[in-house]
Image (cartoon, rainbow, N blue to C red; front, side, top):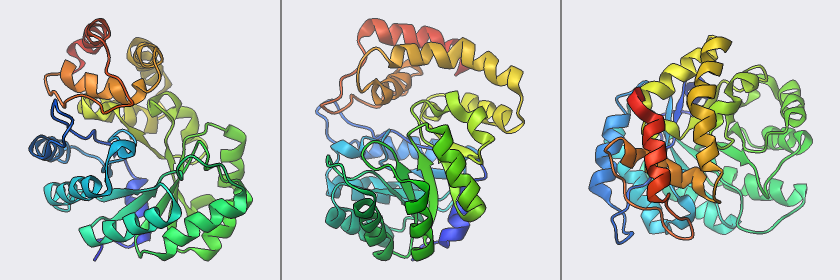
Length: 304
C-alpha cells in the first residue's frame, strides 16, 4: 500500500527540491547496494520533497528489472517515510506496466514514466501507452515529456480527464510556448517538474510558468549548495541565482557538454571529487577523464 494518495504525493513534490540519486556500482559494474544505502540515508536527512530512485541520473537505462526492484526497495527502506520515493517505469508498454505494478508492491509513493524505448509514435499511441500504465496502478504518475515522448496540450488534457492518478508533468523539452499552453489549460491540475539537463539553468524562468520544482542532479554531491540555490530561485533573487550560474553552473555545463552522456557521468565524477566515490558509469556511457575530473574538483572548490 502506498503511504500517500496521488494528490498528496504531487503536492509534496511541488513544495521543494527533488533528489535524483545516482546508482552506485563497484568497479566490476555490479550494483553496490551497501554504498547506495549509505548515500540515500545521508541524502534523506536533507530538506527535499521527493527522491526519485533509479531515474535517468540513476542510470535506469542500464539496469535490469531485478536491479531496479533492488534499488527501489533499498530506497524505500532507507528513507523510512522521510520523503516520498518515486520509482521509474519505462521501455515498452507491457514492461512499463510490470514495472509500475512492481513499484507499488515495493512500497513506492509514485511513478516517473520515462519515454518508451526507441520508437517514435503519434499522439494517440503515446496516450494509449500512458493510460495503460496509469490504469495498472493506484500510484500517482508523473509523465516525463522528452525525446520520443512529447505530448501536446490537447493529448495531455485528455489523459488528465481519463486518468485521475496522472498528477505530474516533467518537462525535458524546453519548449516555452508548449509549457505556457499546458499551464494555461491545466493550471494546478498537475504538478510541474523541471527536467532539462542541469535543471538549475532553467529554474528561474520556469518558475514563472508554474514549474515550482526541478530534478537536481548536483544535489548528489553538493546538497547544501543545491538547496541554497533552490531557495534563491523560490525567492526570485535574480542576483543570487545569476551569480551562481555564472561562477559554477555554466562552467559545470561547459564540462558536461564536452561528450555525449556526460550529463550522468559528471554527477558520478562530482561524487568522486567530494570524496564520495560511487563507482563508474555503465556502458554505453563513459567516465570523465583525469583532467576533466581535476577541473571539476577545482570548480567545486569550497562549495562542498
